[in-house]
Length: 60
Image 1 (tube, rainbow, N blue to C red):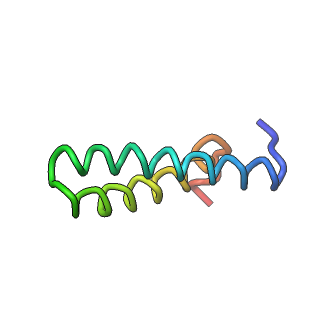
Image 2: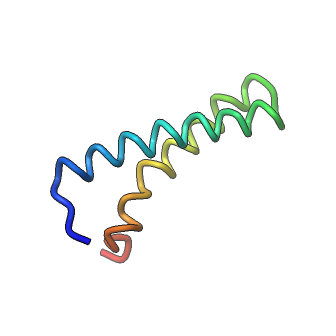
């Protein structure tokens, strides 16, 4: 799958935002208010790296 730089940058942003909200919701359910921040940050990091899995750049 060929993607240019702009597409990858857009996907990184979208997946990071979605990951932040999903992680924050999971953190709220299990750990309360501080869990929202921790889960959100972890979700954003995972979401930021998700386009690399699609592009196959994780081994480089």
